[in-house]
Length: 630
Image (cartoon, rainbow, N blue to C red; front, top):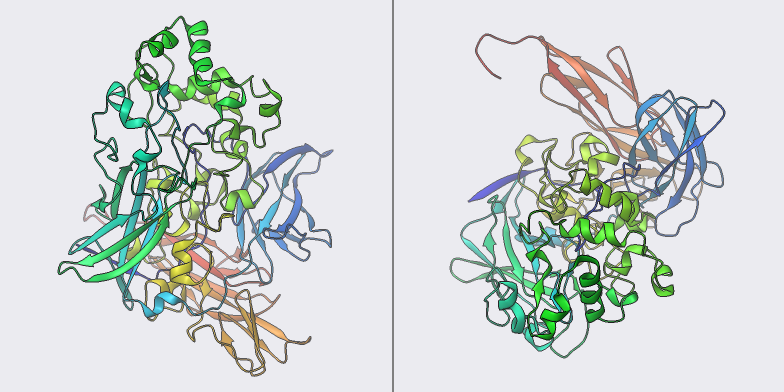
């Protein structure tokens, strides 16, 4: 089976979901775009609006001259990167834009007489390098589902989670306007060259039968082995290997929580079509011993508080799985009636104990007392680089416990992208980010075919990651460490578009990233002595002062109407442009968004342009025919 793709070049989606414990509850704090450091609310003597600081995500330096807009009013940052924008009370989608940086959005709710603090961390614009995938016939998008899995060094006292890792892959046959997602006629196999014998470094299989898993050594609880063929996933969109019994230890004993798998794609005749490497993160850095003197101490404390006999059982050679009593959605374990689920029990009981020892009190973030960890650094993705912490998305331990007590299902209901980001960058309804697919494509033929994580990577490790081990796929296909943004990863001829409706466009290089003689490239714009166009912006003159940079404003009209002019417009830096929006008979204009503009009658005028962007017009039907459902 093959699924056709059109115009493939995604932009940024971020989220921060649970690692290992899977117990996050969204706090509703504002975050967004290429990263922010959250939103705070400060009484301001009657002023209604938003203020904050804009920084470069890589250097942390303040950015001056950044435009922050809510679609109706705008302001710019001063020399210290600080801005203040007066607004009316209500919910606004803010946009930050600056020359050489990607546009970024945040959703912010403003109350009368209150000024919110919303900080931003902006990411440099895409490069104009040659795209390595352009010379490939097939590409592999691969990822781990969670960003980090947890393992234990010792199972002789209890089991929280077994050795378990999951890899996903989508194979795309590159083409012109259309590209194919391959799901038949091929095999996708995986191996771990440095991790071929997990049993060398764990006693899990010695005790596995007592936990209810009768599987041979080096076989996971799902029957999956350390090498083999991936299976078609339940959505029929890609391939998956679920429950790989992986350890952070290499065969030679090296502790490496970011070991890599080698994926090999073959056709039905056994010919190799493509190979790829992808990180399969797993860590044993759970850190119970920051507070407990030993694993036996954990059992003894449990017995003391709950009237159990776990320590006695262990002394008799009987060990237990926590999920025997405590329900755990990660394992599909129902637990026992009347017993708190594992996530609730752990966070509720330990919420007031994070300063129990000096070691625990000094841990930053606090979550690393239980989740991996000061050495592992499982929180490492774009959100982390933008200054977000665990509690920005999940809340503190007491908040997480109360959300579960209030009915939230851990692992199954987690913080949502859409809570903080605009609708164009939200996960599918009632679906976790890790299971979501593109559903708001500009070209509807792309919808339902590409997983969000295929382009943006998994939770806690969203591209661009702070860990150089993560971006093996974008390095191979794109020549950088960004999320998959280039159309040419999948298409032979596409040089610029955007995947998400309402998201900014990027007109990529079609000339292999080269510049004219005497020119230079910097973050997606090109300076050349001849004023040539490359990477979506044009600079005339020497680039030595006095030059004029032009950006591309791309109009897009959904079904039910038109936008004029209909083709991409070259707009000089800090200039505006306008479009006429016309609904078809029986339709009305429902919204026009993008480029920070505003609609007056049928005319949509952008804000001063400082980066490539897209104006998107949407229409809704006002009359319905008698022929039945649309």
